[in-house]
Image (cartoon, rainbow, N blue to C red; front, side, top):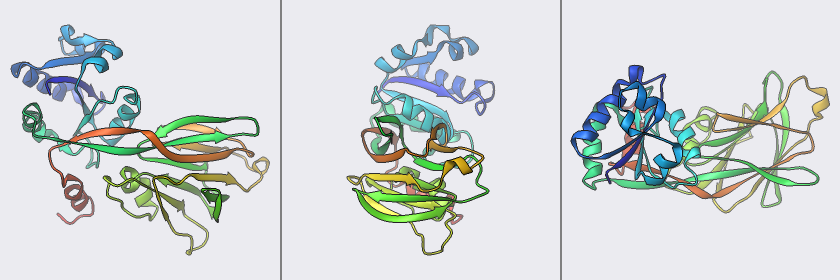
Length: 287
C-alpha cells in the first residue's frame, strides 16, 4: 500500500502542520500522494492537487486528520469507492481516530510494509415511508437519531421489529445505533457497548419516561420501524432524523422510519487488533 489521500480537518490541523509532516514523510518513502487542490495549494505542493474522483479512483488508503466526526463524514463520502480509512486523532480521545499524532509516522511505516489489518464496520440505511412512496434518505456508520429539535417535551414512539410490535416509548428521542456507534450517543443515553467487529443494532430511548424502558439489542438481519404517536400539529417545533450527528431530515406525522443493515460498509485500518479495548480503557478512565 503506497498510494495515499490526505483529508485534514482544517480547524484541527492548524496551519496544516500535520498534513505537511505526513506529506514530507510520504515523499521520502516514495509514496503516491493525492490532495484536494486547495490543500495542495496551501502547503505549496500543487503537483499533488487533484479532483475528488482522481483522488479516490487511484488511492489505496485515505488518511483522515481530525477526530471521529471527520471520519464519519469521510466514510459516508467514500461509500462508492470502498477505500480503507486511517484515522489520525487531532482532537479529543476518539474511538475511530485511534492513531495519535505522535504515532502517525510509525503507523504509516507499518502500513507501507503490509503490517496492518482492515476492519469492516457495519453501516445502517434509513428510509422514510409516506403513504405513496418509500425512499432511502441516508446511511450511517454511527447512529440514526429521531428526536424533536427542542427536547423540552417528550414524544411517543412506536417501535416495531420485523413487523412485530416491540414497545411504545415516551421519551425525548430514539437512537438506533451500530456497534461502532454504541460508544457515542448510545452510551451517553445508557445503552450497551458493543464490540465493533460484531454486526448488530441497538435501540436506545433517550431519557425515557419510565425506568423500565431499556435498550434492545438486535441482529443485523432485523428491520426496525418507528412511527410517531403524537399529533405534530400540537407541537411548536419539528421532528428530525439525524444521521451520524451531521445530516438532518424532517419527519412528517404520517411518516414511517425504517432502519436496516446496509449492504455497504466502512473499512478502517488498524495496526492493533485490540485497539478498541485500549481506547475503551482510556475513555472509561482506567488507564
